[in-house]
Image (cartoon, rainbow, N blue to C red; front, side):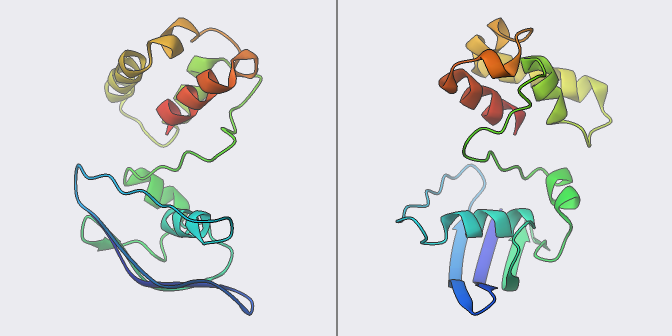
Length: 149
């Protein structure tokens, strides 16, 4: 489903990633482990098209090259990043935050179905859907961030 080959990212003279290869099969799970500064975030932001360095190599999603695609096209393909620190819209409700995750979508029935699926996965999020996101506990905010993605 996701194939990364020989990915190299430079920030000026700093080599952040050097020849990274990763394969993720449909239904698979891959973990990135490493010390601070090892390149985990750079790899993820490269996949999303938001890295601020020069990238070479290949990132293919479902057989299509996405390395040079704009972030909005990558998101439209179904790739999402749940950033650390949650980064919710604090003054919006939980449900409004979740709806922001579907801002590119135009299929109202599909959005409604996905919202219900997220509420089933995270019952606490359903309970809090009318509450301002900024008033949630840290764990509840993380659930909302994952569901939004």
